Image (cartoon, rainbow, N blue to C red; front, side):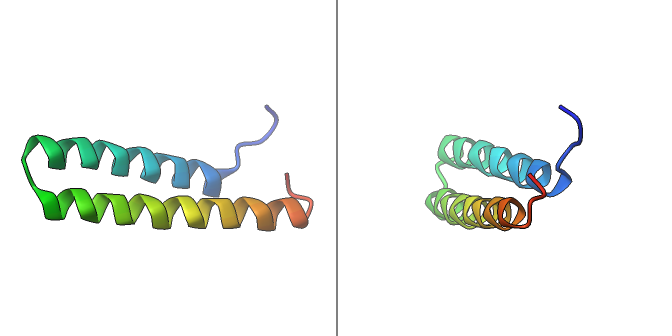
Length: 61
């Protein structure tokens, strides 16, 4: 691994945090928290995949 792709690392950390948030919301019996975390993970993963595609097209990956 030569270089760290910082934007992709940030998206991965945010996605993992959202997954943890789903577990915490379920344990707290918070439906709105779980739904919010699910929406957040969909948005974060979508942005991550879009960023990766753009970086691949620009030859950065």
